[in-house]
Length: 392
Image 1: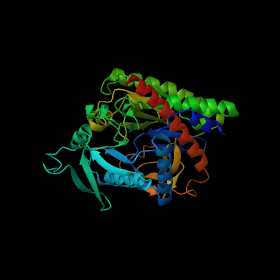
Image 2: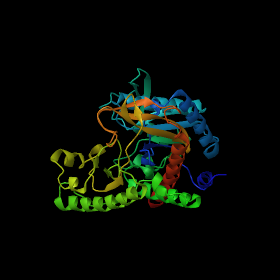
Image 3: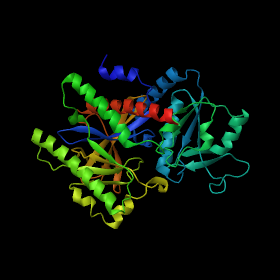
Image 4: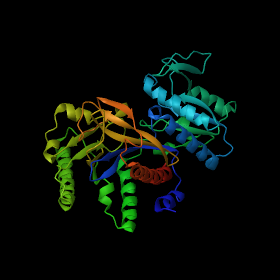
């Protein structure tokens, strides 16, 4: 049994997750990890089949008598591509032999739910219809015993916090509500992931730097405050020095790169790339505004400075990065995030982004390594969830 498999056996692995991977030619690393993936619609049919089998395996081991599942989605029901993701995820769970009802925190007055209906019919980006229930109305049935579910799958990252209505449900929720972006930190994830990579590389006599991103975290930041930007610049300067040493060691002529990111959150918000610490001292108003608030208007006060990795992958001539999807820590498949407006050294999860299929051939022989890194990320996520659940 491999060291990776041994570590997985000792963990309470998350229901699902996704990772973004960068490969520069001299190093490959996970640069972001999501516990509430929202791109199942971008997976190939082969990947969907693998995902369905992994879902079946998850419930066979966790809840072998489960029949009825509540899928809790994000509130942005006007995003038709997100709805397509929910529709595909629902179908995958159903193909594993379970019945599924989708729900979200709909507002009956805004979302056209009348007094005689608990749900609305929504059209996805592909023209398919999705029945979406009002969670608060379902909750009344759950509390009275009229509605019975064996588990809930959470596809809502809880950026704004944990709703009280989710805290006392009479069935388990996967992933844990403790692991939403209300409390999860990227720095915590990469601390665990880098530690695992370092320990495994020590066993094999390898340099862990080749498969991880060094980083630093700065908290209590007001991006509009000069003193805060000076602290960020100093942290960036220290990190650039560490990267320079490794580039010199390996004879790498590429210019070092750092990404400044919000330490929590998703959708590529609050991300910029820098090539010199001084850039942080001279951020213009537009850049500062982008670094001030994230999803749902949440203030950004903690930032992670992460070693940047450029991407060699291309799709249709544009820079691309692999996004791998896992269920129960088994990689089902992935796709390319492509950007028609950005370079290989920039954040691709931004304007100009589109998604393209990715095959084994497209992975250029790197699929096994990418899958191993995705599994390490899943183990790190399990450590995060354990810590966050204990503090809930």
